Every structure is written in C-alpha cells, then in structure tokens.
Length: 385
Ligand SMILES: Cc1ncc(COP(=O)(O)O)c(C=O)c1O
Image (cartoon, rainbow, N blue to C red; front, top):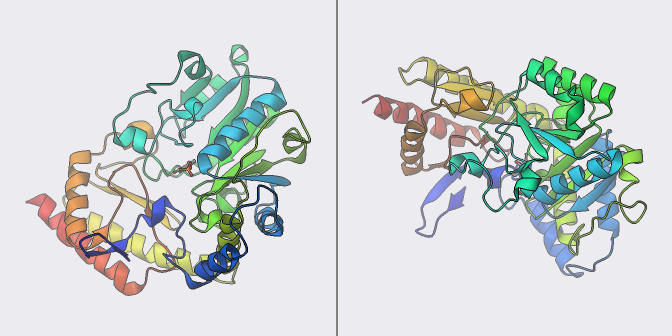
C-alpha cells in the first residue's frame, strides 16, 4: 500500500517501477539498512557487503563471471556499451524500437518508457554524432535483425536488448528471436548485452536468461538487486570484464558505487527471494491474476489484450496482438488514461502510462488482487458507456 499527501491509500502496482518485489518497507530490508547505516554510509572503498552481494548475484546469474556495481540502471547500460566498444574496437550500438535502457545519450533513439509516454520523438540535447552510432531496429523481427547484423558497413560493437521488453508495455520475445540474436552475435563477434534491469531476479532468480535458457556475453542489472536503494550492476564474461579499469583500459568509476546501504538492502532482498518456493508462489499468484484479467477482457467489448510473463504484465487497449513497438503504438492511450483514472479513484495505483508494466509483488495478497480485479471489471463497464 502507498498513502498520498491527502491520506488516500492505494494498492500499489507500480512498485517503484520494478524493484519492490517484496512490497514496501519489508522488515528484513529495513533492518539491514538501519544496521548498516549505524556503521557509516559511504567510504569510497569496497566493503565486505559489496563482495557478498557480488557473490550472490554471480551465483544466481552464472553468465556473470565478474560483476561491477554502479548506482543506477542507466550507469550500468552506459558502462556496458562503453566496455563493448572498448573490447571490440567497433563503434555501432544496435538496440530495439521501444526498448528503454536508461537515459544515457546513446539510448534516446526510439526509446520506450517515459520517452514514448511523453511523445518525445528523438533525443533533443543529444548530438547527431552520438545518434549516428546507435541503430534501432524492430523487436521480434528476425529478418531485419539478420540483415542488420550481417551488414559489414555497420561496424557493430554490441546489441543491447531487454530480453523481455517492459518499457513499451510488456512485450514477450519469441524464443526464436532470442535464439537467432544469440547465434548471429556469436558468429559475428558482436557483444550481446541483456538489459535485465527489470527482468533480473523478477522472472526467475537467474532472470530472463534463465527462463529462456540463453546465455548473453554481458548483463545489466538494477532495481531488485538494490532492495529499493539506488543501484545498478554490469558484468559478464571474464575476458570482457578484465578490460575495465583498473585491470584494463576502459574507464569507469563512481563515488557511491557499491554503497554499503544499497548493498545491505540488496543482500537482504536477495536472501528473501532465494528462499525455496518464492518464485513458484509469485508465478502462481500472477498466473491466477493474469487469467482473471483475461477473463474480464474476453467478457467485454473493450478492445484490449493482456501481455504477461511471470509477475509483469500490461493490458494494452488494442485488439492486439502486441509483439513490437509498432503494434504497441496502436493502443488507445486516451482509453488507457480513462482506465487509469477510474482505477486510481478506486484505490488502485497503476503506472500512469500505457507503455509500462503492472508488477505483482510478494506483498500482494488475495484481497488486494481481488480488489484490483473488481475495479478493472467496473472500469471496463464504464469505458463501454
Ligand atoms: C530495462 C531498463 N534498463 C535501464 C533502466 C534505467 O535504470 P535507472 O532508472 O535505474 O537508471 C531502466 C529503468 O526503468 C529499465 O527499465
């Protein structure tokens, strides 16, 4: 639950845009932060907490042979592409339309999340030279992917992808698309970066890469691994990570990176999600909720379709299917806005944008979910009038 300044209470399905997989103020996370704060909040040096979290993260995500903590998802993706360019000696970054990788200059090309919501078409403030080195292509489209990656004139350093897109609303990849992406990048010596800032520790302990059984060269993490404090991480193959300073020549550093409070919160959160049955329970609850949502959608004349995987989902106001940015953009955002306002008035806080995810957390119980379903049903009825 969250409470606004006028003391209205809402059941929260935004979850700080992903990190709050345990809900707010989980006692074990709060206790870890309090205890750590009393020892000092920042030293500008590594601490045992950083090592402990690094070990937990690398155990859960085996493709991470080495990992570096930073302070946000933006910093993680920005550092990962710099490293991929340094490692390959090439310059082009390929991304996918509607995917969002934070607000570093190179990524604000056909980006998702707030960039679509606010209708910002490109990237004012970003020099043309930077945009020239980012190519954005359609998600889930194997033929454009192959044609692009095989173009020898492009000098491609890396492909960065949300292995399940969460920032144009939830769009689930075709497994064949991810397999083709892995096969082509391996063949062509292009670094494959999975941006698991949302999906890491949400879709499974090992993220989307565990769920789809695909091993990227590098992975970016954030959100859940910081337990709700500012955090990010990037890591991957040892030979690539060995290029990061001070071992190698690719510079990256941060005053607050590996900050003890964030590390302590992350450790506490990962201890909880590591407990047996955590993801099974979350999956079952989310599948039940998703099934009920689909039943409501099927019973109404409102043109809508639900995309769901695990505990992340989006109800798009279009008959669908929604498989990429172009089909997501067919959604009726005015209708979503009306739905959002009806839900808010009924005590349910959804993302104020069609192009974001609903996140189910361990703190959502049957009563919360049933209330959200009842409100959805009545909102849909009002949308038909
Ligand atoms: C997939 C993905 N990558 C990167 C980011 C950027 O993370 P941050 O907001 O921590 O900078 C986000 C933020 O929503 C994200 O969803």
